[in-house]
Image: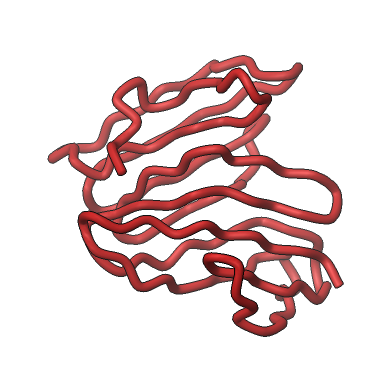
Length: 137
């Protein structure tokens, strides 16, 4: 999976792609308008962070590339790639339960904390990506 060289782009299918884990220093793109919202991404090899209208959406350590990111009221789905294993955090509904799917297989249910954050680790390598789906129970 390749890095998103534009840092942040809208796809024809109505999804977003963002992040470039190959960069050696922090790079950002802000004021990106998509479906009436304003997005900002900060990315490099150590971290990738996406904000929507100034609010936290996604963060990964180390940096990652995310393709086909789609967020609805009950589900978040995307494909993630990175040089190595990655941990990502999503901002969801506070104190809610979600089922996490990695490459179609359930990883079980998890509950968000008071601030709505949900953290998930995925085993990856430079030539592998994972499809992630997080569904509200």
